[in-house]
Image (cartoon, rainbow, N blue to C red; front, top):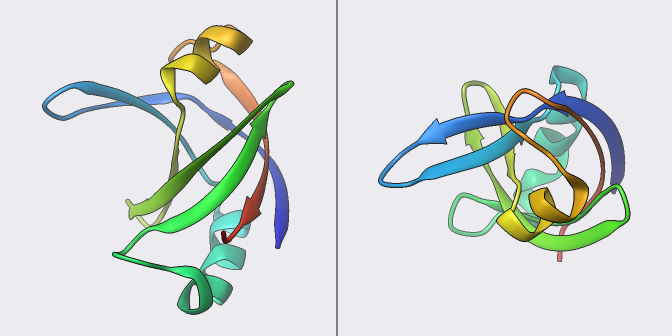
Length: 94
């Protein structure tokens, strides 16, 4: 499954700060429909693109949606800061 969406880069502070793009409700619903086929250890593996940067990661459920982690290397390459609108394309699954 491939999805395209735009979302705001948000910070979640744990032991260290992390930056995520929460999926909008319609995209999260589509992931929920296929999660049983792809989920492992409670996360959904994805291949994602932000601008011209491609990366792999795993989304996890939080606040009734899925959070897509934005790696530091991706944020630096694309100039993404917390609060920025981010256009994302992703493929769900391995």
